[in-house]
Image 1 (spheres, rainbow, N blue to C red):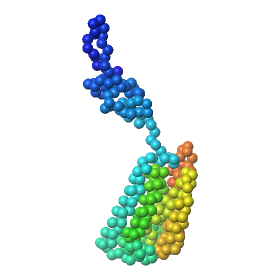
Image 2: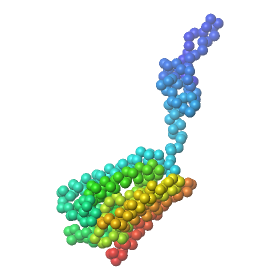
Image 3: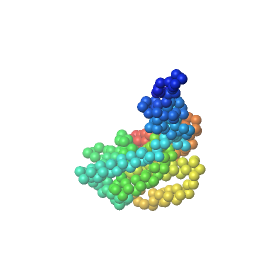
Amino acid sequence: MTERSGQAGDATGGPAPTTPVCYRHPDRETYVRCTRCDRPICPECMRDASVGHQCPECVSEGRRSVRPARTAFGGGAAGRQGYVTKTLIALNVLVMILSIASARSGSAVAGGGLGGLMGNSTPLTDWGGVLGYASYVAFGEPHGVATGEWYRLVTAMFLHYGVVHLLLNMWALWVLGRTLEAVLGPLRFLALYLIAGLGGNVAAYLFSPAYASTVGASTAIFGLFAAIFVIMRRLGRDTSAIVPILVINLIFTFTVPGISVAGHLGGLVVGALMALVLAYAPRMRRTAFQAAGGAILLVALLGLVLVRTATLTG
């Protein structure tokens, strides 16, 4: 206990009682004590507690001993800030700017179907879109996933045919992403987004015509549509508002020319599978189960690519 000595004893010769002083500010008298360590604390050092006040050191120690808040599916509470969603949107916008810049510096080839309505292909979309075997020839050499350009399975989900194409997908990502990221946490949401997008691009590679080029975040977006349905059902919440939106998007997928049906359906199915892994993982060893489930999906997708490539090149 930190105390300051008082004046000399009284007329009887006994010692005068001392006045407690703040342990951090010895020049300040106080009669308030920390409810945990019982040290005197002045108003500047007081930290409100459930009962009484605590000193700064006890508050810091208490924070270290308290486990961080987790979501219902084991994710971090930081997902409520939507950092991953905002970063993905910013990345897509940046790639769109680079794509436009590449069109100005090179020769853009006009796209057909929906691509022609929303914008033209650019040297960047030609470089990063999902392509079948020998579906794009440059300098006399075939290009595509089957020729070893596996990066296209990832880059395609960040490229778009024009600004309208980009805005439609980013609006859906903003609406769906913030909700899912808050419920799942940042890392689990990012895993869902990337695996769903990869699944859609793998499906586009497997089932699209050989000369078709597929780009867009809609492969991942359709995975988010499926995921939000699964997650809301798992939480016991109403999904009646989600089903009509999903049905409308599926109608557009099958009726509007130029849309990659395989890409949308692939993202939908893989997104649903990943959401089931995240939502229904047992509470005990939940993180390990979720990581293993995501790894199995990833290996399965890459295995399908290997089999398809072997068929095309064999």
